[in-house]
Length: 412
Image (cartoon, rainbow, N blue to C red; front, side, top):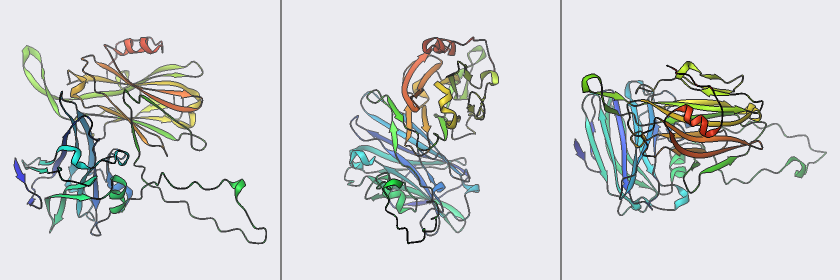
């Protein structure tokens, strides 16, 4: 591995790259959020889809995608975020891909609270570069760590290490992203608006451009649940994502011969409807559900052997939320991992016009099934509660949550 110093750049070979940001910190230190921005010659994004972060896992062209992980050693805590970059399909208008790290605005802490912070770039051709950032004197809460940039049709990497005042929102706006202003003044209700009978009605204004919501709620033992109110006629399309560590692990095959296998987790759920209906949505048995009809829950395929970078997704029809009583989100280790701590698994809930909600699987159990979270219809609200409970089988999980299904052996 070649160590770079601040300001140094190096030419790259190959086409498929991994960019990994790694940090280590004390337990009381702030969480680190890592993002990538695909920038044109102006130094700005061409649209909000060119920001890749915890709330938007891939660029519009699929050339850059993100996978987050975490670790909790005995003495310190830390984590890592990994990007997969496919340079041949990056838009020709993109000249730079900037990789950044920020602390949450709510903590009011700078990056100096981080013990170590580094960025590493490796490629399918054997390139392997790293840049260790000195954060000890950093007074900023945001930093541009490094960038891939195009020069005369040649891609290079530059070690930047440039601090930036403010957190993620000011940084995103600096790069041209339209950020949702959660603190904006509410518009007055129609009944409180003074109108003039003599003046003609004002022409209808164009709807506001969609904006990126940077808010995030992390469920934990201290804050295990959160409730979301409907904003409008329905919750809209509710999406549940499961993502995990893509690395391969050694497993024993016939005659004790070891071989590498990719981690394979399956995102699944049990559900109970208000009309008494119940069932499971999972890849095993090919029970992928349905979005436009009961159970109004649909599993989008089953492919995570390293080829699909944004994990697996469940879609829930929020317009039918009144028909759903409870959904138990669980993950199954299908093969490749002996321990949940090795997966770096995280489930995120995406609800339109609400903060992203994440729940991490950080237990040490060797059981095959993890109940990650429960979604409940709480008088019309969507209540999400972190579980992180482990079971030997989906049948045992079902018995714990009282859904009451008849189980038979299944295959993908």
